[in-house]
Image 1 (cartoon, helix red, strand yellow):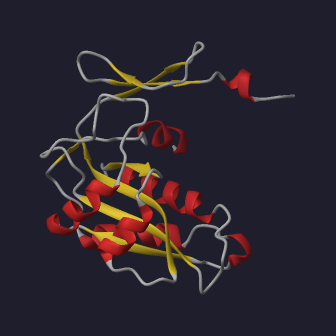
Image 2 (tube, one colour; image 1 turned 90 degrees about the horizontal axis):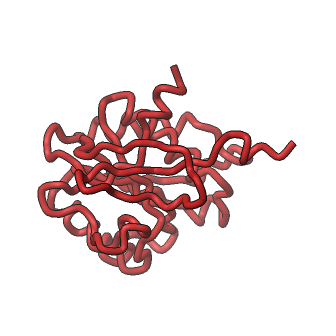
Image 3 (cartoon, helix red, strand yellow; image 1 turned 90 degrees about the vertical axis):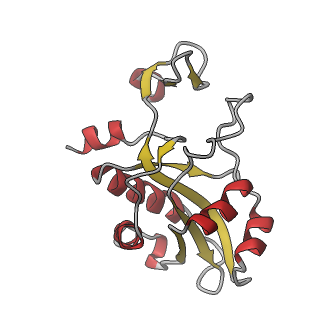
Length: 187
């Protein structure tokens, strides 16, 4: 059921180093994004794929990992993603991507979850620096980075009381408060 898949699809930030996603696995996930809706059917998204350890290591330092976990700089060596998908906007196709990148990211992560993997959508990116480091053409704008791998952490949902900030307990379990349904429906 889609609800079960959505409940398993959490923002994972620590990963086992095996099994790793391979290039064919990433292509399968991007194909799910390709088949997803696109505003005006413009299809302006392109994808940079990385499963190579050296390229992954190049991408990693340009990402911020968990804004609410101020004392955590991100996953340690041995817990880092085994793959990345960088979602790009092709400005030659359209100067605007509307909400396409969000739809694509969710499609990719649901596909990864279905295959026993997980990931995190990262929007806090040193875009200009990463763009240069990867040698991307000027026509491509970095929109999001998806960090992917086999989850190495437990993420639990709980009902938000007054604070919606996620946190980790002393066992390393990641807690994510969610607002109640009656709080978000306005009619």
